[in-house]
Image 1: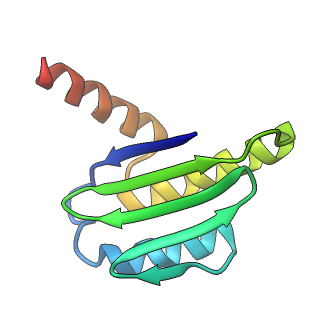
Image 2: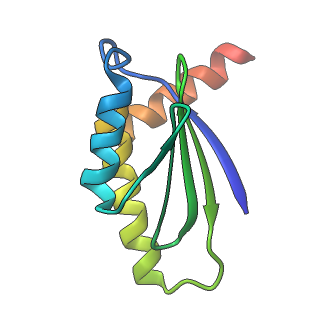
Length: 107
């Protein structure tokens, strides 16, 4: 299953985003990251493929592996949340609030 999510950057986090994102991916996942045309790709744990693109927002495409043990899923989710916080500047709670605000303003 492939999922695409969009995350906004905290004020001031857009500047230098490419360098910060690469460092955050290496920090949180600890694996080699493929870079091409300002796109970052890796595979880790329960993620078959994680693709990151930077525009005005952070675009994250995930492709999950099937039949993965729960401990892999929990670890992968924790590392993914770590990455998002370092990349966007927002905690999970703040990202949820921003997403709710975006839904409300779109209505």
